[in-house]
Amino acid sequence: MALSWKTGGVLLGVVFFLAVALVKPIGVSTQFVILDGILWNAVDTSIVVEDAASKTGFASPNAYLDKSGGKYAAAVADPVNYGFIFVLAILIGAAVSGWLRGSFRAAHRFMPEVWLANFGYSPVLRFTAAFVGGFLVLYGARLAGGCTSGHMMSGIMQSAVSGYIFAAGAFLAAIPTAMLLYPREV
Image (cartoon, rainbow, N blue to C red; front, top):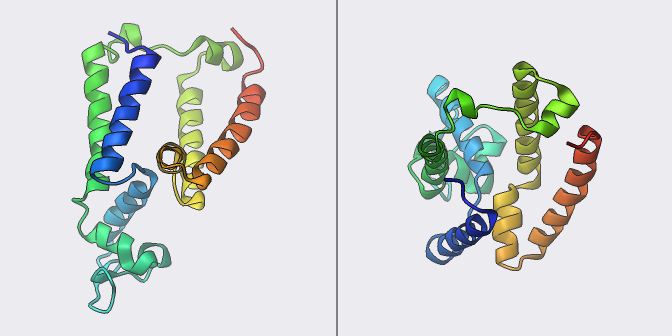
Protein backbone atom coordinates (compact mmCIF):
# COMPACT_ATOMS: atom_id res chain seq x y z
CA MET A 1 0.00 0.00 0.00
CA ALA A 2 3.04 2.27 -0.31
CA LEU A 3 2.70 5.35 -2.46
CA SER A 4 5.21 5.80 -5.27
CA TRP A 5 7.39 8.90 -5.07
CA LYS A 6 5.91 10.16 -8.35
CA THR A 7 2.32 9.91 -7.13
CA GLY A 8 3.27 11.36 -3.76
CA GLY A 9 5.07 14.27 -5.43
CA VAL A 10 2.08 15.09 -7.62
CA LEU A 11 -0.31 14.89 -4.64
CA LEU A 12 1.98 17.09 -2.56
CA GLY A 13 2.10 19.63 -5.40
CA VAL A 14 -1.70 19.63 -5.64
CA VAL A 15 -2.04 20.17 -1.88
CA PHE A 16 0.46 23.05 -1.95
CA PHE A 17 -1.25 24.61 -4.96
CA LEU A 18 -4.69 24.40 -3.29
CA ALA A 19 -3.34 25.80 -0.02
CA VAL A 20 -1.76 28.80 -1.75
CA ALA A 21 -4.77 29.36 -4.00
CA LEU A 22 -7.45 28.97 -1.33
CA VAL A 23 -5.89 30.02 1.99
CA LYS A 24 -2.20 30.96 2.22
CA PRO A 25 1.23 29.40 1.70
CA ILE A 26 2.07 26.41 3.86
CA GLY A 27 4.54 26.74 6.71
CA VAL A 28 4.62 24.82 9.98
CA SER A 29 7.61 25.75 12.15
CA THR A 30 5.89 28.84 13.60
CA GLN A 31 3.24 26.58 15.08
CA PHE A 32 5.84 25.01 17.36
CA VAL A 33 6.42 28.48 18.80
CA ILE A 34 2.67 28.84 19.24
CA LEU A 35 2.49 25.46 21.02
CA ASP A 36 5.35 26.52 23.32
CA GLY A 37 3.47 29.74 24.03
CA ILE A 38 0.24 27.86 24.79
CA LEU A 39 2.06 25.62 27.28
CA TRP A 40 3.90 28.58 28.80
CA ASN A 41 0.68 30.59 29.07
CA ALA A 42 -1.02 27.65 30.83
CA VAL A 43 1.63 27.86 33.56
CA ASP A 44 2.06 31.65 33.62
CA THR A 45 -1.03 33.59 32.51
CA SER A 46 0.89 36.86 32.38
CA ILE A 47 2.81 35.77 29.25
CA VAL A 48 -0.06 36.77 26.92
CA VAL A 49 -2.26 39.72 27.84
CA GLU A 50 -4.98 41.67 26.10
CA ASP A 51 -3.74 44.99 24.77
CA ALA A 52 -6.08 47.37 22.96
CA ALA A 53 -3.11 49.36 21.62
CA SER A 54 -1.73 46.32 19.77
CA LYS A 55 -2.69 45.60 16.14
CA THR A 56 -3.93 42.15 17.14
CA GLY A 57 -5.45 43.02 20.53
CA PHE A 58 -2.83 40.95 22.36
CA ALA A 59 0.70 41.54 23.61
CA SER A 60 3.41 39.68 25.50
CA PRO A 61 6.32 40.69 27.72
CA ASN A 62 8.29 38.09 25.72
CA ALA A 63 9.79 39.88 22.70
CA TYR A 64 9.47 36.85 20.42
CA LEU A 65 5.75 36.34 21.12
CA ASP A 66 5.18 40.10 20.88
CA LYS A 67 6.80 40.50 17.45
CA SER A 68 4.73 41.60 14.46
CA GLY A 69 2.42 43.63 16.62
CA GLY A 70 1.54 40.73 18.91
CA LYS A 71 0.73 38.32 16.08
CA TYR A 72 2.19 35.31 17.90
CA ALA A 73 0.64 36.39 21.21
CA ALA A 74 -2.76 36.50 19.49
CA ALA A 75 -2.22 33.01 18.10
CA VAL A 76 -1.31 31.76 21.59
CA ALA A 77 -4.47 33.36 23.02
CA ASP A 78 -6.63 31.79 20.30
CA PRO A 79 -4.80 28.78 18.82
CA VAL A 80 -7.78 27.57 16.80
CA ASN A 81 -6.51 28.99 13.51
CA TYR A 82 -5.57 27.65 10.10
CA GLY A 83 -1.87 27.09 10.86
CA PHE A 84 -2.33 25.28 14.16
CA ILE A 85 -5.16 23.07 12.88
CA PHE A 86 -3.05 22.33 9.77
CA VAL A 87 -0.16 21.05 11.91
CA LEU A 88 -2.50 18.93 14.03
CA ALA A 89 -3.97 17.53 10.80
CA ILE A 90 -0.45 16.61 9.61
CA LEU A 91 0.14 14.61 12.81
CA ILE A 92 -3.27 12.93 12.67
CA GLY A 93 -2.91 12.20 8.94
CA ALA A 94 0.50 10.63 9.46
CA ALA A 95 -0.83 8.46 12.29
CA VAL A 96 -3.84 7.34 10.24
CA SER A 97 -1.63 6.60 7.24
CA GLY A 98 0.77 4.57 9.39
CA TRP A 99 -2.10 2.66 10.98
CA LEU A 100 -3.72 1.90 7.60
CA ARG A 101 -0.38 0.69 6.21
CA GLY A 102 0.27 -1.47 9.27
CA SER A 103 3.44 0.44 10.13
CA PHE A 104 2.88 0.12 13.88
CA ARG A 105 3.15 -3.68 13.88
CA ALA A 106 6.37 -5.08 15.33
CA ALA A 107 7.31 -6.69 11.98
CA HIS A 108 7.40 -3.24 10.38
CA ARG A 109 9.57 -1.57 12.99
CA PHE A 110 13.05 -1.63 11.57
CA MET A 111 16.07 0.53 11.18
CA PRO A 112 17.25 1.40 7.70
CA GLU A 113 20.24 -0.63 6.50
CA VAL A 114 22.35 2.52 6.07
CA TRP A 115 21.79 3.39 9.75
CA LEU A 116 22.67 -0.14 10.87
CA ALA A 117 25.85 -0.14 8.75
CA ASN A 118 27.06 3.11 10.28
CA PHE A 119 25.74 3.09 13.86
CA GLY A 120 24.61 -0.45 14.70
CA TYR A 121 21.39 -1.52 16.37
CA SER A 122 20.70 0.82 19.26
CA PRO A 123 17.17 2.20 19.53
CA VAL A 124 18.31 4.67 22.21
CA LEU A 125 21.01 6.06 19.90
CA ARG A 126 18.53 6.29 17.01
CA PHE A 127 15.87 8.08 19.07
CA THR A 128 18.49 10.42 20.55
CA ALA A 129 19.86 11.24 17.10
CA ALA A 130 16.33 11.84 15.78
CA PHE A 131 15.51 14.14 18.71
CA VAL A 132 18.76 16.13 18.44
CA GLY A 133 18.43 16.36 14.66
CA GLY A 134 14.82 17.51 14.93
CA PHE A 135 15.74 20.09 17.55
CA LEU A 136 18.55 21.49 15.38
CA VAL A 137 16.32 21.66 12.31
CA LEU A 138 13.55 23.41 14.22
CA TYR A 139 16.01 25.81 15.88
CA GLY A 140 17.51 26.63 12.48
CA ALA A 141 14.06 27.07 10.97
CA ARG A 142 13.14 29.63 13.62
CA LEU A 143 16.45 31.46 13.09
CA ALA A 144 15.72 31.55 9.36
CA GLY A 145 12.18 32.76 9.97
CA GLY A 146 10.59 29.64 8.48
CA CYS A 147 10.98 25.99 7.64
CA THR A 148 11.47 23.95 4.49
CA SER A 149 7.75 23.83 3.80
CA GLY A 150 7.39 27.59 4.15
CA HIS A 151 10.62 28.87 2.66
CA MET A 152 11.58 26.20 0.19
CA MET A 153 8.39 24.51 -0.97
CA SER A 154 5.91 27.38 -0.74
CA GLY A 155 8.59 29.93 -1.61
CA ILE A 156 9.73 28.18 -4.78
CA MET A 157 6.12 27.56 -5.77
CA GLN A 158 5.59 31.33 -5.65
CA SER A 159 8.92 31.99 -7.45
CA ALA A 160 10.32 33.78 -4.41
CA VAL A 161 14.08 34.34 -4.62
CA SER A 162 14.34 33.61 -0.88
CA GLY A 163 12.88 30.15 -1.53
CA TYR A 164 15.61 29.33 -4.05
CA ILE A 165 18.32 30.68 -1.72
CA PHE A 166 16.95 28.65 1.18
CA ALA A 167 16.81 25.49 -0.98
CA ALA A 168 20.40 25.96 -2.14
CA GLY A 169 21.54 26.48 1.46
CA ALA A 170 19.61 23.44 2.67
CA PHE A 171 21.17 21.15 0.08
CA LEU A 172 24.63 22.68 0.48
CA ALA A 173 24.44 21.77 4.16
CA ALA A 174 22.54 18.46 3.89
CA ILE A 175 24.70 16.69 1.30
CA PRO A 176 28.07 17.07 3.09
CA THR A 177 26.38 16.27 6.42
CA ALA A 178 24.93 13.03 5.02
CA MET A 179 28.31 12.11 3.52
CA LEU A 180 30.00 12.76 6.88
CA LEU A 181 27.43 10.86 8.99
CA TYR A 182 26.95 7.92 6.63
CA PRO A 183 30.36 7.06 5.13
CA ARG A 184 29.46 3.37 4.78
CA GLU A 185 26.94 2.69 2.06
CA VAL A 186 24.77 -0.39 1.96
